[in-house]
Length: 108
Image 1 (cartoon, rainbow, N blue to C red):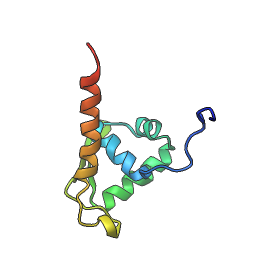
Image 2: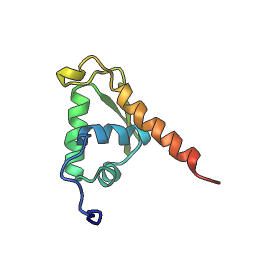
Image 3: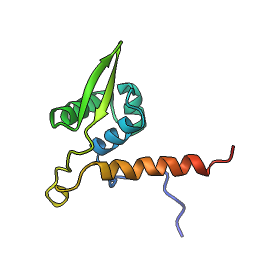
Image 4: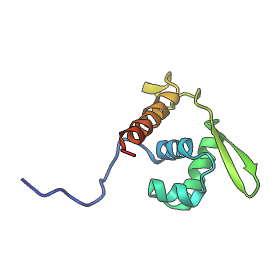
């Protein structure tokens, strides 16, 4: 049997757009720099994704002091035809529920 491969995967089940949405759900006041680090992409890519999501109505931006606060529109539907009737709330719920389970699994 081969040893585990430490290289990053060449593909994943979630797009960078989905990962940015999940990251913004976890931290609506997150800085682009922090989102880029969390997702593993450049700040420029995060800016482009946030612009895409904003223009498509998946999130709104509110200026709070020198930072942005992002609010997701969880009732927007997925864009791909096979999932088009499903709200993104379902995707977000999977990851926020996972966060809750991870935080309760830890011993104090």
